[in-house]
Length: 104
Image (cartoon, rainbow, N blue to C red; front, side, top):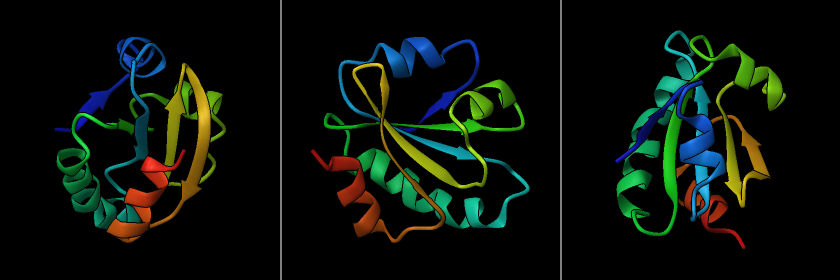
C-alpha cells in the first residue's frame, strides 16, 4: 500500500523510517505522473516489507519539492537513513523502477 505523504507526516514516515522509502513526487495535472501511478501502486504491493512506497503531491507540499530540488515530475527519490540516497526522473517501466528501488 502506498503512503500519502505531506508536510505533516514526511519526517515521521520518510526520514525516520527503518526501511528504504521510495517517494514519488507527482501532481494530478502531470500526464507522465498519471501514466506512472499504476506502476508505483504495483511496486508498493510487491515490495511490501522491503521498501516503503509513498506519493507526495508537489502542489500540496511545494516546500518539500523545493527542499529536495524537484525541478520536473515525476521524480522518484529513495531515502535511506533519513537522507536522499538516489533519484530518477521521468516515466520508468516496472522492472527498471523495481531495480532502482532495491538498489544497494
